[in-house]
Image 1 (cartoon, rainbow, N blue to C red):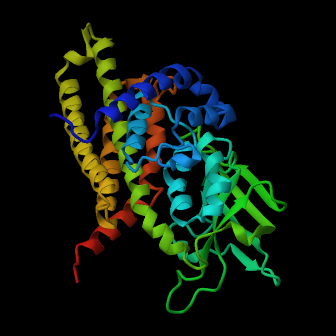
Image 2 (image 1 turned 90 degrees about the horizontal axis):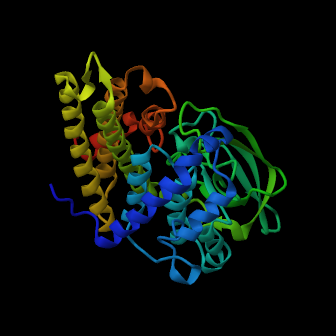
Image 3 (image 1 turned 135 degrees about the horizontal axis):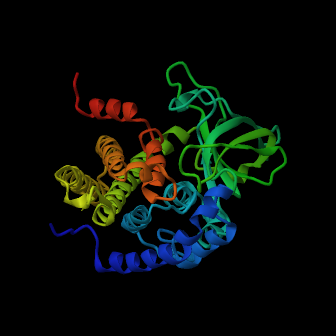
Amino acid sequence: MRRTVFTAEHEAFRSVIRQFVADEVVPVYPEWERAGHPPRAFFRRLGELGVFGIEAPEEYGGAGQASYKFHAVIAEETGRAGVGFGSSVVHAELILPYLLRYGTPEQHERWIPGFVTGELMTAIAMTEPGTGSDLAGIRTEARLAADGSHYVLNGAKTFITGGVVADRVLVVCRTSPATAADRRSGLSVLVVDARAEGFTVGRKLDKIGLLASDTAELAFQDVRVPVEDLLGEEGRAFAYLSENLPRERLSIAVSSYAQAAGALGMAVRYARDREVFGARLADFQNTKFVLADCAADVSAMQAVADRALDAHDAGELGAGEAAQAKLFCTETAARVIDRCLQLHGGYGYMREYPVARLYADNRVHRIFGGTSEIMRAIIAKSLDLS
């Protein structure tokens, strides 16, 4: 079936990204996995390519594109090759909307130019030990100084993607106590300088996948944060997070589809080349049937992802629809990638084969951005079952 979600401009961008991945990412990717993140020069290279400035206004060096679909192209091309761009996905896809939507003109002047070039890398810190998906339980707190010039930040965060390489971290913290009527009230976002005294990067967490994307623990001990670095209004953080979650879940859905499509391509190529019992693996009926099932699943994921992409660009992607896309694509991708790995036999369990990396990298998609169980709860709520 003809795919209509992308324009000629998107496809031209795809050609550039595909060549870039082949030339500058795939050959060195094992080194990044061993280091735990790409080198800083790579982020500046992404800035040169315009990856970080897709949606940034032209006056700050960006392209001023409103469409999320350029990010989807990157997800498809990295999924196709079984690699990633480290924490840059969080930087470019998730954090820029916060800065653009809630930041002041003065903050835009300070942060967006460096953001676009890759000189200023960012992360967002929500999750805390013991809170998990319950963001209303956040205990990291920031108290306004008596003279009103700065906040004093104390607390700890965990599972922070890009926490090791970030120059600025959007920290979700409590600036006033929650009320009995609303546990979610009193949360704010501070854009914290990682060089500030009292800001500590703790353990770089040892994950089973996404080895080229750093994930860290962060700690804040009496960190002074100027009031000028408050993002948006005090007490509005939960509303801001809720407004941006559909986009985050779309990103995860698209990435899951892309990884499954990449795994299918790898399995097809392997089946054509691999000989067992005197015949090609592709000649066995079981292989054909498994790949047929996987191809049908990938097509279904593509349809769901494409519909969500169109809805997002039209400003119509709601919480329920985004949760459906994430749930379906992440759960289906897990099944497809597992089957593709199985067709590789013992080689599929070796990390030198990209399908093994996809298997490990994809597993977290059913956890972050809201677990599958949370997605089901959101979808059920959208059905108006009362």
